[in-house]
Image 1: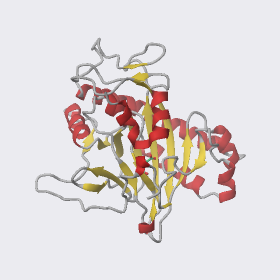
Image 2: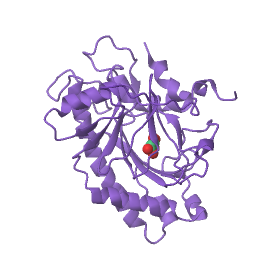
Image 3: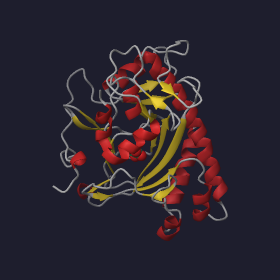
Image 4: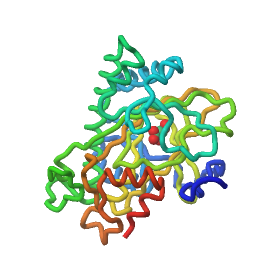
Length: 327
Ligand code: AKG
């Protein structure tokens, strides 16, 4: 009753049972990135689910394990040490709960650490003498994620009928006039920790939300918790698959695809017995870039918007932000 209007439709206690119809498995597709028909597979998954899991992604599993081990070490520090690395109200990097949940009416069973740009200053607060190891692992992981995200972006664009040789592909313009294919984009890393929860019904790991940028690449440890909402089906689990990474469409890709690909409404529910860790990499164009529906995808249904302005809209209007850009 005291939720803001933009949240009034969120009912996380309304967990409907997923209906598995014959010939229609209720699982997010798993795609081998080296498959000859990868463009078709990714296109179908984006259109139907807005999400898929990828294998053969060329990110060394030893690096993923190393980053997860650093996350475990970070969240295992005493609270007073973690609080020294707190994200400031106006800052991007640091320790704290996710920003998405200020109005959520359940206990947040979550700790996070966000990295945008350099993590050195915050890492020094956590490990005054051994911060380099953490920062090197995070930098390394972000580099790998960035090139994987760019590779997946090109596949998604091909699925939308656009490729590198098209001249009319300037639907993301950055201030230096780079178009979609000439710029590798930018990213942010989010380490998440969800301790096991004695009473999962009274808490939520991460409140339902959509991701704001183009796409997200997620590693989850061997613990269930991630769920996506599908019309007519309710909340569906996205089970961890060893060695696979989860990819989901974000709001800016929804705009770029002219609403052909849905942005994915997802949440994390706490696990009663196991501690869950995840590492999310959010990928998008530089902040000053303008994003608009790709030409050639029928009449544009969104107004162009800069990445910066869209983030501002999202912070203010949450999941309603995207509908404010409808033409
Ligand atoms: C986020 O960090 O925004 C997520 O949605 C993380 C999801 C997860 O932990 O599986």
